[in-house]
Length: 511
Image (cartoon, rainbow, N blue to C red; front, side, top):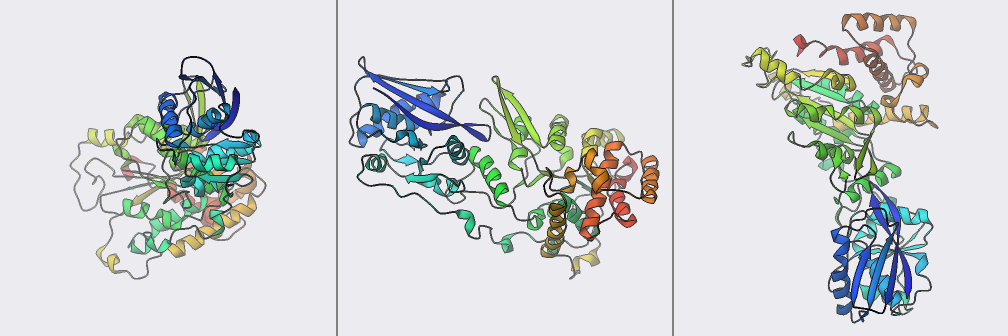
């Protein structure tokens, strides 16, 4: 007898509905699984056999053929177990199959018949809802994550026995109706690092405020112990809260990457990723035989912090060029195309040379000129152009360490939320939300410069050897500075402040 059940397969950070067709006929007792499943899918035959027998059910003694359609798409994962098992039980008349077409099945089986947690639940449930399914059975451990999807009945199960009782009308499973985002899901911000601990770098904190307010990338250069890492690690404390769409998109990424668990079923705080400088291109961009999100995608809607970026491989740094411009990553593996989001804020920090003291007023640099040139060459011109803000950090004076009036994260966050609210209202109905997303077509409308300001920018263009891309970024930053001040138009002081964020590192002599 032939039966059909529905599951889903993860593709990138999205999912595709999969029809699991099961046929049992006379012949040698064997189970064949076809449809380009990986080894994990093939091994399901042993898990299913043991789970059925250990649950007090009868394993059919015949030739079992399971086809996973579309057959031309590669499939991986153990979450097909539940759908395949239900197909076998329906084909062997051990379960009523009248309403199977209204259900989706996602879950890995253990040998004793329990339904175990799976990765990628959120995109799979979303795909099944778009397919028009009314109900989906999921592992109980994944119920909080799946509850982010509205418009579909979630039926959490812990064992095969619960599934059978539901379909055989013995004990119906109640839909899980809790919306996790109705309550206060944000973690206690008092546990986060605070900018009040940063002394003597108020000008840098101002630059960080501008960067976060407009979503601008920033590069910080300075000698050791000037506070580059300390400042960067406190950026999450001033990031605005995520809205529902951002939480769902970020949670999908982490779900596919296998980084969620019962203790953290969804992501409600903006990511802060800090990869090691020995990371590979696949680790940064994503990849593998079955591609997984890389650090860039894991930083989507948050911050990617590259500490000591000068220590990264030059080719690895160059891979940032397209993600910084396009805000997405496109990969092709085994003839299939994968697209990952990459809408992140880049924060990079580096020493000016290998020893760290080139240009320091107190410490002597011991690097040879060739070593300094080699170290700085890791940051090529194209990458420097794509990083909006360049900031130099100076050593902190001893008297500043006892300052009691350092700006706190709460004060900085208030300014950032004020500026972002202005931007959201300004760009309402458009495809952008922040100033860093302005393109050539919108810059004249939203970052208009007066004749005097155009002359200022023209002088800076010649003096600092700027280029058209840099000019565009300066105008975006000036727009953000004006928003922080609550001004509708860009003033001379706003443009001057934006220019200083590009002036300091334009010449190697200023490193």
